[in-house]
Image (cartoon, rainbow, N blue to C red; front, side, top):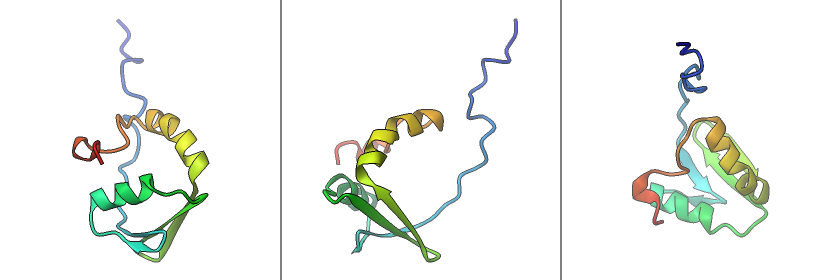
Length: 88
Protein backbone atom coordinates (compact mmCIF):
# COMPACT_ATOMS: atom_id res chain seq x y z
CA UNK A 1 0.00 0.00 0.00
CA UNK A 2 1.36 3.40 -0.93
CA UNK A 3 1.08 5.89 1.96
CA UNK A 4 2.60 8.82 0.09
CA UNK A 5 -0.80 10.48 -0.33
CA UNK A 6 -2.01 9.89 3.23
CA UNK A 7 0.10 12.69 4.70
CA UNK A 8 -1.44 16.09 5.25
CA UNK A 9 -0.34 18.66 2.64
CA UNK A 10 0.44 20.96 5.57
CA UNK A 11 2.81 18.56 7.32
CA UNK A 12 5.87 20.28 5.86
CA UNK A 13 4.83 23.86 6.68
CA UNK A 14 7.26 25.89 8.80
CA UNK A 15 6.12 26.84 12.30
CA UNK A 16 4.05 30.03 12.44
CA UNK A 17 5.53 33.28 13.63
CA UNK A 18 3.87 35.19 16.45
CA UNK A 19 2.83 38.81 16.54
CA UNK A 20 0.78 40.73 19.06
CA UNK A 21 -2.21 42.70 17.78
CA UNK A 22 -2.11 46.16 19.35
CA UNK A 23 -5.06 47.82 17.62
CA UNK A 24 -7.72 47.44 14.95
CA UNK A 25 -8.68 50.56 12.99
CA UNK A 26 -7.06 52.63 15.72
CA UNK A 27 -8.90 50.99 18.65
CA UNK A 28 -6.65 49.30 21.21
CA UNK A 29 -7.24 45.55 21.49
CA UNK A 30 -7.37 44.19 25.04
CA UNK A 31 -8.72 40.66 24.49
CA UNK A 32 -9.34 38.03 21.82
CA UNK A 33 -13.10 38.51 22.14
CA UNK A 34 -12.69 42.22 21.50
CA UNK A 35 -10.46 41.50 18.50
CA UNK A 36 -13.11 39.21 16.99
CA UNK A 37 -15.84 41.79 17.63
CA UNK A 38 -13.80 44.59 16.04
CA UNK A 39 -13.08 42.57 12.92
CA UNK A 40 -16.65 41.23 12.56
CA UNK A 41 -18.23 44.65 13.10
CA UNK A 42 -15.98 46.49 10.64
CA UNK A 43 -18.10 48.15 7.97
CA UNK A 44 -15.22 50.06 6.38
CA UNK A 45 -13.76 48.96 3.08
CA UNK A 46 -10.35 48.55 4.73
CA UNK A 47 -9.33 46.95 8.03
CA UNK A 48 -6.08 48.21 9.55
CA UNK A 49 -4.37 45.98 12.12
CA UNK A 50 -1.41 47.38 14.01
CA UNK A 51 1.02 44.76 15.33
CA UNK A 52 4.00 44.94 17.63
CA UNK A 53 7.43 45.68 16.13
CA UNK A 54 5.99 48.60 14.12
CA UNK A 55 4.16 46.30 11.71
CA UNK A 56 0.80 47.04 10.11
CA UNK A 57 -1.54 44.84 8.08
CA UNK A 58 -4.21 46.47 5.93
CA UNK A 59 -6.89 44.24 4.44
CA UNK A 60 -9.65 44.91 1.96
CA UNK A 61 -12.62 43.55 3.93
CA UNK A 62 -14.52 42.28 0.90
CA UNK A 63 -11.57 40.42 -0.55
CA UNK A 64 -10.48 39.08 2.84
CA UNK A 65 -13.96 37.73 3.59
CA UNK A 66 -14.18 36.12 0.17
CA UNK A 67 -10.70 34.56 0.39
CA UNK A 68 -10.89 33.32 4.00
CA UNK A 69 -12.43 29.87 3.35
CA UNK A 70 -9.85 28.92 0.73
CA UNK A 71 -6.96 30.27 2.84
CA UNK A 72 -8.10 28.26 5.86
CA UNK A 73 -8.40 25.12 3.73
CA UNK A 74 -5.01 25.62 2.03
CA UNK A 75 -3.30 26.11 5.39
CA UNK A 76 -5.11 23.15 7.04
CA UNK A 77 -6.83 25.41 9.58
CA UNK A 78 -10.17 23.89 10.62
CA UNK A 79 -11.87 27.11 11.76
CA UNK A 80 -11.33 30.87 11.69
CA UNK A 81 -11.37 30.93 15.51
CA UNK A 82 -11.18 28.68 18.54
CA UNK A 83 -14.36 27.10 19.94
CA UNK A 84 -14.56 29.60 22.82
CA UNK A 85 -14.82 32.46 20.30
CA UNK A 86 -17.36 30.95 17.91
CA UNK A 87 -20.27 32.77 19.54
CA UNK A 88 -18.59 36.16 19.44
